[in-house]
Amino acid sequence: MHPSFDSQKSLFQSIAEWLEDTILAGIYTEESQVPSITEISVQYKINPATALKGVNMLVESGLLYKKRGMGMFVSEGARVKLLQQRHQLFFTDYIKPLVDEASRLEIGKKELKDMIERGYDHDN
Image 1 (cartoon, rainbow, N blue to C red):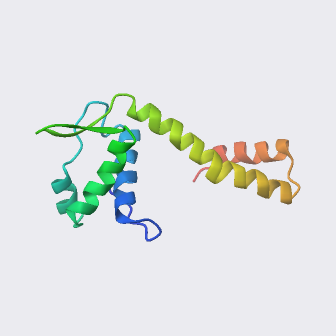
Image 2: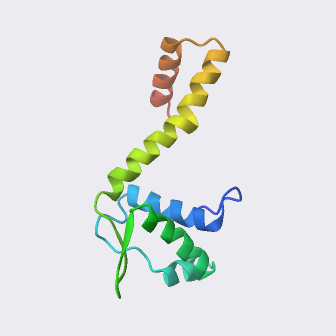
């Protein structure tokens, strides 16, 4: 899993999101060590200060913590906290606009629910 350097986001935000995604995917579990700032900056050819800023975002939010002399580790409860945050973002970023557009198109709750169920059944 590699970070997506989306032009809409800053590099440090992309690094933070990538680390969040790896925690959600179970690549880095609670109490496991994440790559060092040096490893991240070398692997993705970015400035170490940029990598540090992305990692520090997760430290400030309580998802990572530093063990002095050892590196950064995933905090206990980080995955659950991330899931809760992402659920809320999913509602705000996707569900609310979906319902608003469905209302404009006069798509009722049952029809929208049927469409969503059809989406789950559809082979991608």
